[in-house]
Every structure is written in structure tokens, then in C-alpha cells.
Length: 336
Image (cartoon, rainbow, N blue to C red; front, side, top):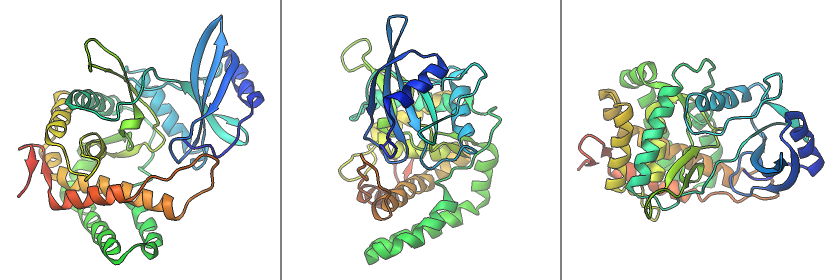
């Protein structure tokens, strides 16, 4: 969500005109995130204020983008709370702004919950399971572009930047995940328990608004689907557990939040035996994925007018915790 490409008010208005969305009143770049250019776009139509998000895609190509945008459209139309892309009269949802592929979606209500409790985790867990089930009949296919194939490509580029202990951990964990991916149990997950996943559902990609009673916020939606791909549902769950259910200081899983998240997920889609067995390994995979990507963004960055790379040491700590204390949802605790 950094600003890599500047958009003028005239360029934004041209897209609003094409989509018949109204008269631009405000255009503001969003400085969080590191993949795409994003702007908050406010406009007036019929004397009412309407709020949108304009995204310019910096890495994804026009050939890849239909998967992400149509997935959001597919999920929204099945009642999953996600921003639906706006289409023109011909049904097109991908456009060009400032020479880049672009789309405009509704802006979700509410704000982030950056200090979640078990109640928030329950809402995210149940909605994640609904999203997985709703995506089962989505007809397009796009692999998880930050999966094993990318780790194999990125790790050799990162090793020269690391201290010996870090380099050894990175090499050994990649080897562990390669062995896991070649196992019959993992093949069972791919066959029976996979589909479109969000793959990046952190606390800042979910919105809540005040509900009934103090501290009882209501989940209003998931957004930023531009890391989505077809992968195991368990990987998506592991990504969430490694963010929503941890102590940010040391990366350890907080038991009550993790148990609440998985129980709420299973209330909608029960995990299979294979998923329960492989959850500790997938928690490691999810930690590795974000350690690698944060190392890459730190050491091999792109220029942007508003860009702050995330600290990769956080997910190094998370990975070390998942190796030292594997977590099993069935008995709700770490293995000794």
C-alpha cells in the first residue's frame, strides 16, 4: 500500500467518470504496506459522500490480476464481507491509471483491531472458514506466488546478508519445508483441503466497527487480497494464528486466542485429521514465508515515496518459537 506511482486528481476523476461514481472531493495516498500504490478516494454523488480505495498494481500483471479481482467479486456475491471491485457498464473491473493496471473498490467501514482478544479471533476464524468454503467453486486458478517455489528462489539471494546463525536457520527450515511438501500427507491436503486463500490476513487487513456493548466490535470485512492464491486452507489458518494469536514481543502463541480462533473456524469447517497433524509444520511454513519476504524487502528494496519495510526479526522470532514449541490445536498446547 505504499505510493510508488503518483496519481493526479484529473487521472482519478477520469476513472470515476468512466465508472459513473461521482465527483472527486479528496485523493490521499496510503503509506502503509509495501506492494501496491493505494489511495483513499472520496467523491460525491447525488449529494452523498462515497468512499473508495483506488489501487495501482506495481508487481502483478494484467494477466494475473483477474484472479484477485474476480475472487473478491465472487466472495462478495456469496456474502463474505470483502470489498467488491466496481465494474463499468461492460462488466470490466480492471482499468489503467498512470500507465499501471488499476481497480477501485468500496472502502470498508471501521478500523483495525491491533490488540485483539479471543472475541476478535473468533470472528476472524469463523469468517475465514466461510471464505474458504465460498471459494470452493471459484473457477480461476493462480498459485500462491509467495510459496515454496519463491522461497527457493529468494533464499540464495538473501543468505549473503545474514549472520551465520540466521543463514543456517533459513537453510534448514527451507529443507524442512521441501521435505514436507514432498510428503504423502501434504499431498492429501493439496487434494482435499485447498482452494483460494487470502495468504496475508494480518490484523491490519481486517476491519471492525463498534458493536453492542463495550469492547464488542463487529467484524466488517477482509481486504487486500493481492497475495491471494490457491494453496492449502491450513496455510491460511497458520498465517492468521501467527499474527492474531501471538505475543508480539516474543512471537509465542497465546493459548486462549489460538484455541478460540481454531474452535471458531472449526465451527464452520472442521479440520481433517491430516490438517490437525500438519498444523505445527504449517505454522512454521507461515513464519518462514514472512521472514523471507521481510528480509527481501529490507535487503532488496524498491524505491517508493512512502515506504517503510517491516522488521524481519519479528518473524525470525516467530519461526524459532514454532520450532521450539510446536502447537497442536487438538489438545490446545505446545508439545513437550
